[in-house]
Image (cartoon, rainbow, N blue to C red; front, side, top):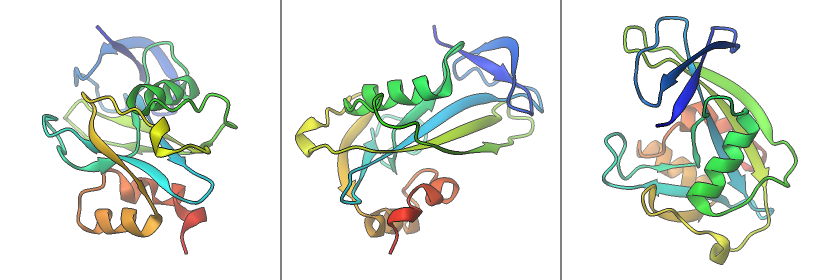
Length: 170
């Protein structure tokens, strides 16, 4: 069973935990997730397509990410999630932290912070090993392709993370 730390409105751990996806949070309580934008030096971004069996946003495109486990640091979580989902190791890349955003879902028990990272990594398509339980495939996309998917409404979190792509926008 996976557990997540519960954070207060200042993004400080409360000392309490919750079971993963057990939406029991009160107002002003949060869990922490991470997103890792991985780009090559040529400006292409690694994006993955969610498996059709997902209960939410099946078939949509996204960047690697997931929940931060209890006791885990944000940077360690994003390293783990990228490695688990894509087979790419970003642990030797510079920090990569860009910003944090949060979502309030009053009465739903699912308030969360999201730490967003961007890593520049020189890799080839052959280096990518997608976890089949997580994704139906991947694409090395430029910003115009990502923007097009977002305009179609099938790219998760784009409005919240668009600035992670900005240095490569033309």
